[in-house]
Length: 267
Image (cartoon, rainbow, N blue to C red; front, side, top):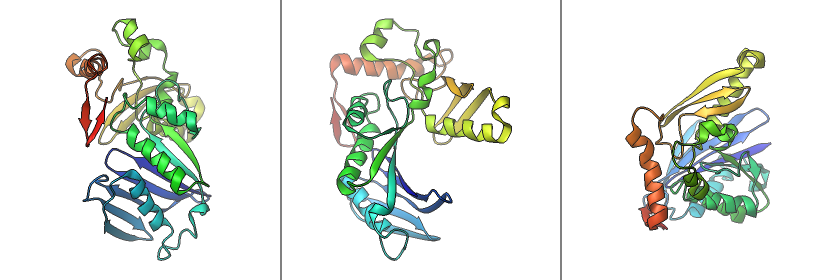
C-alpha cells in the first residue's frame, strides 16, 4: 500500500510517498516559492537529490509537477498514479466540527473553507491542494488530517478565554490548539515504550520552528499552550501577545478589513 502525504501551505508544497508495507519513504521533497516565477522543486529519491527550477503559479501546477516526478521512469517507484492507494492532506485548522481525520467530501471541503478566516495563510493552500488532487487524480481517495482535531477533547474550562461569552458565541473565539498530529504521535510512541497503564498523565512537547506543549490525560488532550492562533501564550505573563491575535480577529470581523497576504485578498 502506497500513501502520498501532502502539506500544502501558503507558498510551498511538501510531500512524501510512503510504502506502508515496510514504512519506507520512496520519495520526498518540497516545492518552494509556489505562486511565483522562482518556484523550485527539491526531490530526494533513491539516494539522489534533484532540483528543478520550474515556475508553479498555482498549487495545481505544483502538484502536477510532483505527480510527473512520481511516475518518472528513471525513479522506478510507480507505474502510474493509480498505484497510490490514498492521498493524505495535513490541514492546519478544522474548527470545532472537524474533530478527527476524515475522508474528503463536499461537506468537509466546505468546513475547511469556513475555517479560512481562522487560518488565512494555511487553509487556502490546503484546500487548493485537495481540489488539485481531485482533478489530477480522480481515482484516488483523499483524506484530511487536522492539526486542531486532537485538542477538541479539551474541557470548556481549558478552551474558553476569560473574555465575554458572547465573543465565543458570535465569533467562535476559543482555544483551538495546534500541532495536534505531532502531540498525538508522541502520545502513541510513549504508550508503546512505557505501556498505556504507565502513561495516563503525560505532557508532550512539540519543538521545531514553532513550539507547543500539551497536557494529556487517559490519552486525550485536556490543555495546550496554543490558542486561537499559534501566537497565544498562557493567560498570565505576556498578556499583550496573548490578546493581540484575538483583538485583530475581532477587529477584522467588525470592520471587514481586507488582509493582503501573498497577493491574496481575504475579506
